[in-house]
Structure formats: structure tokens, C-alpha cells
Image (cartoon, helix red, strand yellow):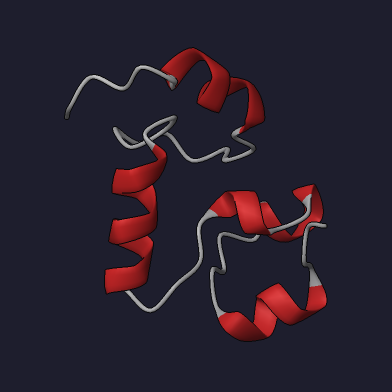
Amino acid sequence: MSDCPKLAENLKRCNCTYRCSKKGHCCECLHYHRSMGEFPACFFTAEGEKTYDRSFAMLQRHRRD
């Protein structure tokens, strides 16, 4: 994993409750979820994020503004 100059700032905004090596590394997280046809946790409300369902259908129901 690359060093990210904004890691501390990213971690303050990251609402993902899943433990993974991409936490705070937004570029890697976005690429990973995109490759899986998903959206990352930061797109969802806290309630939606806790389902671990990263689908577009869930995003429509639990979009974080």
C-alpha cells in the first residue's frame, strides 16, 4: 500500500466499519470497489454502511449526502 499524504484526513472522514488494508487510502478503496461493481462505504449512510451491501440498489436507499 502506498503512503498517502492525506491519510490522517481521510481516516477522519472514512465511515467504513469493515477492517481492511484500504481504510483511509481512498484511491485504492475506490478502485477495489469499482472492480467489484460496488460503491465504497463513504457513499452510504451509517445505517446503509453497516449492511456491507455495496450495491447500487442499496445506494439508492441509503445515499450519504
